[in-house]
Each structure stands twice: as C-alpha cells, then as structure tokens.
Length: 121
Image 1 (tube, rainbow, N blue to C red):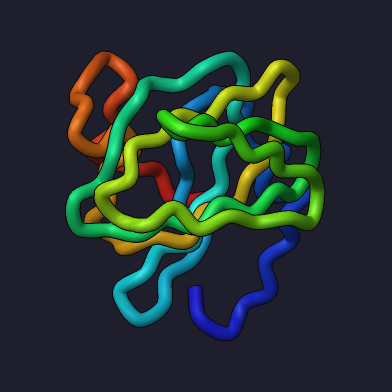
Image 2 (image 1 turned 180 degrees about the vertical axis):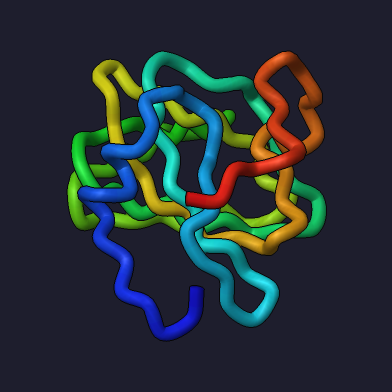
C-alpha cells in the first residue's frame, strides 16, 4: 500500500455497513481506517490506545460521561486512552480513524458489534 495514492471518496464508496472499520493504510504501527457511523455506538474505552476521529463527510457527536463534542467535516478529535466515550450520528457520517493496529473497535465492551478481523480495501 506504500507509494499508492488513496482516493477517500472511492474507498468510502466500496462499503455501506456501519460501525465496521476498513483498513486503507498503515504506518509506524498505526492503522488508517475508514468507517461509516449511523445511530449510537456502545459506551467503551481503550486502556492502551489513543484514537483520532477525523470527519470526512457529515457530522457526529462524541459523547463523554461529562460532556459532548460535535464534530463536523474537516474536524478531528483525539480520545485519550482510558477515556470512556460513545460516538452518535443522527445521519450517516464518514470518518477516518488513526489508531494502533491492535485497537478493537469496541474496546473494553465486547459485543455483537466487535470486529476483530478488519477488511482491507
């Protein structure tokens, strides 16, 4: 995947499922993932990993136990390791994630939404 241009619109067009990140690149032990969110996700945290959420298209709320942050196109938020959070999207949103390759989407809250083997697109 090195030295190849990635077109985000093209890649987002390859899938329609929500809450199931796809790997589009990796660097220095970090994964570049694309995901579509819609509805409310599970409350969870990641004991060992920070996560970066960058909105490509749409908007969503990142809920924390003590506040809520709204993210719109072109904005990003870093959720530090150990901080409980829950993304919520009223309408479908396209999000780029930067996080360690070992990060599991549901963190410490294993459920039917947990994805352990991510597709590469």
